[in-house]
Length: 334
Image (cartoon, rainbow, N blue to C red; front, side):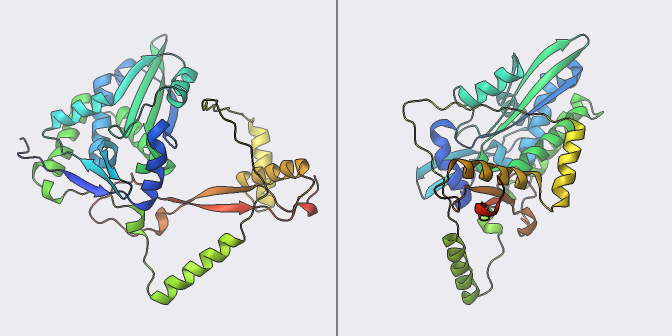
């Protein structure tokens, strides 16, 4: 069955999505990736099997398969052209995976510092590379997406669903049957009801009255006025950006001791690291120790959003940020 006269599905980017999209255009600022290393037998990770699993996810989560059209700063849209057949879904998925040879470090470095992998016409991508070890292969998978279509929680959940499909007992043909069924549900007979996941702003609970909204605005302005930091870094010109991802491993005993100590003080590991950074800054800034480093942390808003009745995809950005400021560092032993 083929869809006659495919329709075009679109919606405007929300404010949060726009704030992530605009800086990404030049060199991929905020582009996300999740690296996963694993071992598997070759038949588990065959390209046709991977493509079918990826096709299922791109059907269930349409933002992964969208394009972006920008006409002006206040006229930016997600655009999805529905697939004419299950075969076209599989073809599109195949175009957005890539197999290569090399090391994990080369794979990550090429994504971070090479030509941009993603674009307004490719919002998700999945390069895979392998190294043979006897009858098994060691694989490195990089799930790549733009930040304006989702956040870390969506990325990790997507990886979990991807590996659940690959490692299932279903044959590749059975995975393709799922592609056909998902296409039939979305495009075979109900295509007029298709929608893209709603933006964060559309799903936030609305203030119940004008007075409550006014109080919220005043409260926000007052909180911003208290957020002052004393750090600044000189800007260096002429050097190309180069991103590195250092990894520091702690053994099990040291990790357990650190977690136990943090728990006894009712703080998290990230809170402790934040305090350590401020102490280090205070040691270098004897002139103004009461103006510490100010950092921000992400806040997951998913538990507070209203349900999206037309789309059950978890691929949408649902984070905000809050600022952290240390207490008076003059009272902290350095």
